Structure formats: structure tokens, C-alpha cells
Length: 114
Length: 109
Image 1 (cartoon, rainbow over the protein chains, first blue to last red):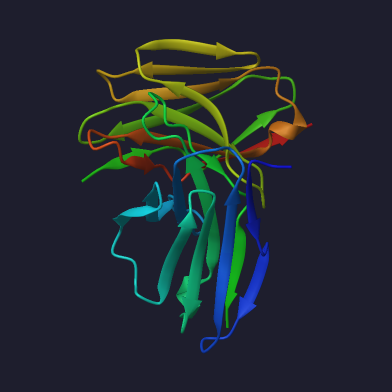
Image 2 (image 1 turned 135 degrees about the horizontal axis):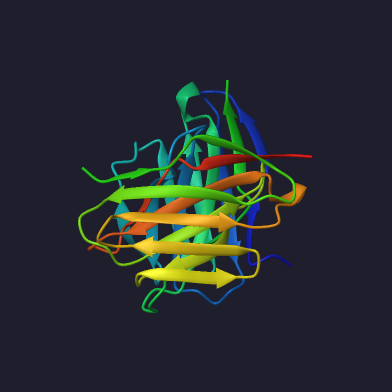
């Protein structure tokens, strides 16, 4: 079993739909992250949770709503998205407080907004 | 502003050596990462440099010069499976991870 699991792997939704992305980490880490990856662009950090508390919200539109019920699970709730939100959404986890703080990623959810 | 620059795409031949460069301008420096990402897959950690010099891990090596704001990833004895995107990222003074756009490496037989 991989360290960070994301579901679903692919998602197609209309602009009026509501859907959720799920991330689970099995590494015992204390921090979890949501990133957006668009073609030929750097990874964009969206949200950071440390010990279940949100520590970063990088000016993300309110149509993206994160939820972190415990240190192993992270959700991204989506509603009334726009076509420009189509991208690969990556979840990562790390053990903050260590020197390197290496982030481990899931395989992502490929989102298409029609 | 903070910036990470790396080439968009590179092509190399199976069995050869390739060097992928990364230059950075960030507010402070607390380490540099290289990740590999195959198409449709998760980015996977390759290396971490915080001090100047060369770190070697098998066929892959990573070099850092903090005074020049420069790093490179060196891949030896290239294999077809090395075709992937290689992402450079720097941790700044606030421990924020700043990412480059990635270098797509194409390996030809």
C-alpha cells in the first residue's frame, strides 16, 4: 500500500456540481498539504494542515473548501467550480519539525470541469 | 519575488549522462529538493541539499552552490524509465517550499 492515497484518480464535473477529493496518509505524519498542478506551471500550494489545524490558505477561492478531521485524512470539497480549475490536485504529507521535512505525494486527482 | 528557473524540456540518449540545472532567487534558503514525476504519477523524492557540494545516490547526483543560487541534478547511465519530469524546489526563510515548473526529460534509444 502506498504511503499517500488519493481518491478518485479522475473526476469530471459540471460547474454546478458538488464533489469531494479524499486523501489518506499511512506514514504517521503530522502535516498534510493540498497542491494544484497545471501544465507547465509550478506546483501551487493551496492549503496546509499541521496537527489538524489549518496553517496556510494561499488566497484560494472559497469554492475550494478543505477539511482535516484527523492527522491521517484530508478532504477538498468542491462546489461551483470554473473550467480554469481543471488541473491535477495533489495531496502530500510530511513530518514537520524534522530537519528535511520531505513531502510525500499521492498520485493526484485529475479534475476536469465542464 | 521568489523564482525558480529550470529548463522546460531536455532530450538525452539512453546510456548517456544528462545534467538538469536549477537556479533560484528566494528570500532565504533552508534546503533544496529534487523530485521525479512520471506522467500521471506522484512526484517522488530524489534528493535534498542544504550544504554546498555534491550528494551522490547511485546513478543520480545533486549539486548545490548557495552563493550562486544554483543546483543541478546529474543522471548517469540513462535508462528509458528515467523519462519523466524533474522538479526543483527550495525552502525559503519561512520554511515555505517554492517550486520550479519542472523539466521534462525525454530519453531516446
